[in-house]
Amino acid sequence: MKNKRNRLQIITEILRSSVVGSQEELLSLLAERKLNVTQATLSRDLKLLKVAKTPLTNGTYKYVLPPITKTISPQGTFNQLTSHGAVLSIEFSGNLAVMKTKPGYASAIAWDIDNKGSMEILGTIAGDDTILIIPREGVTREQILNLLDMTFSESK
Amino acid sequence: MKNKRNRLQIITEILRSSVVGSQEELLSLLAERKLNVTQATLSRDLKLLKVAKTPLTNGTYKYVLPPITKTISPQGTFNQLTSHGAVLSIEFSGNLAVMKTKPGYASAIAWDIDNKGSMEILGTIAGDDTILIIPREGVTREQILNLLDMTFSESK
DNA sequence: AAATTATTTGAATAAATTTACATGTTTTTT
DNA sequence: AAAAAACATGTAAATTTATTCAAATAATTT
Image (cartoon, rainbow over all chains, first blue to last red; front, side):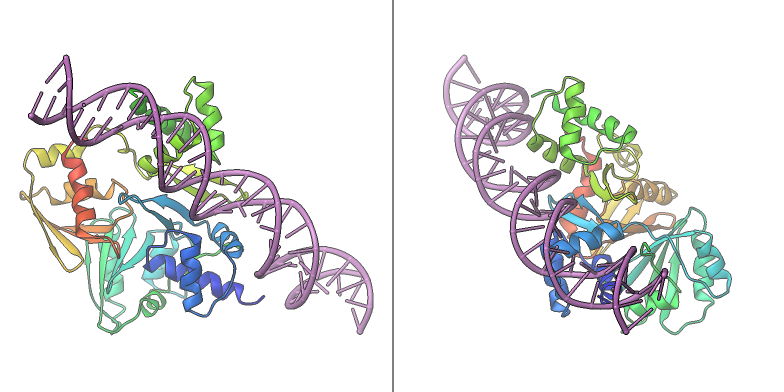
């Protein structure tokens, strides 16, 4: 059906923001969003998305997305950097975003983010290869991702 | 038995050097080396080693070791630093952890924490004597402490 | 050293995941 | 537009992986 693309998108969003330990669990999370499929389909989806199942230290498991690969880019310094693969990943925890970059790139990229002058981002703090992005209150994860022109690759 | 440590070592070597797609397969590879265990034990071993099962582009699966060694290694840099008292304290606020270190030590220790490659920690940002640790959503303070404690004390 | 407690493991089983097959849909080709 | 090819997905079966339970071994305590 034509829901597939959308479903894959939702799945990545779910996996990016929460801890999912089994396909059944993911099944429920999708059901909550009115997306009804069977576990078999999820198995196929996860295979397509190259999602790995990895053990956590607390004795449970978690499905994890592969590191970011592709970006779509209009123009600008930020996009130049990301399209060169300097940005490795972005993940969220609570209202914070954590971006991992290649070593040494963090402050350069953080500067670019700051200078986009977007209202949605309150500020950034950069280390050597990690940037902490603090969004303004009420700003969604999607808004941040869109702002940063981050697009996540799906095979095909 | 006393073979466990050795077996875990062999398993990491095998996984590092070849593509293993199932536990049964790993079972044979171990048998070739005169190591006879059951699949149940392998499941436990892989869990212990935090080995993830991930889909490959060719449609098959592969067991992959967690990023950067450190899995079974007796002690690491972090351990050395902490045992020398470089880490002064760890405290939490909300879902964030703040670690205080001796002046100048922060980035070195942050690097070690990052390179443990643990799923639980999204990223770190280091100043001169302070490290901000951003845990993944849903990860408890205890989990973080354990994770770091593990490096304080010798494991296994 | 005896008693207690913790660890390791296999066998069997449960649970979770993958896949073969069938069917309905969409897309492409002719 | 019909036919053919490619795709998406559910069902059910096969496979794979995780865990429960019991027993044996090792470690620790008394």
